[in-house]
Image 1: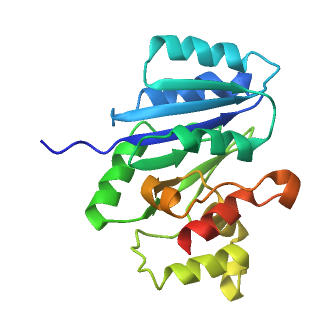
Image 2 (image 1 turned 90 degrees about the vertical axis):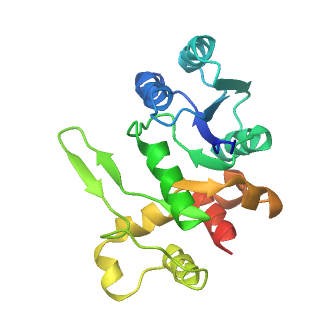
Length: 210
């Protein structure tokens, strides 16, 4: 019998106590069950670590690693070293995802034999929600067209300037499904923010699409 592809969901956590339960609930309740949830507590000083341990006791798919505070890049890299899934997803500890996200993403990855799957997101504000779509409709990209995606990550041109948040969405590592094999083969890791200041997500994606 063919093995169901496993998804490793990587969650870096630092002082996100008010949002963490909603984040974890959205992960453990995924309709796609063949997952592991790797949570790296990056030296939180609130109750985030306690909440993580509580959830890990209730669900053996959750792996919790407690580290000294070293930044989000280090936390994600720590999780990448132990991830065992065919696919990798990143979710921030103060975000949550629809319960069908993994199922839909794996379906599209398998349908198109895709190395990367991207999807829309919703930005939450105190008084309203704003849906954001990277592209207006579903679109497969060839290897050659991925060069254009890399260009858009670096800078927008012409009418693209009207929707700068789309460039932000391209650069983030959340809202995407990656092949772990490609990450491992090319030794792709997150760069320490102390070296580059910002843009660690974008640099990871540029390397991945190369």
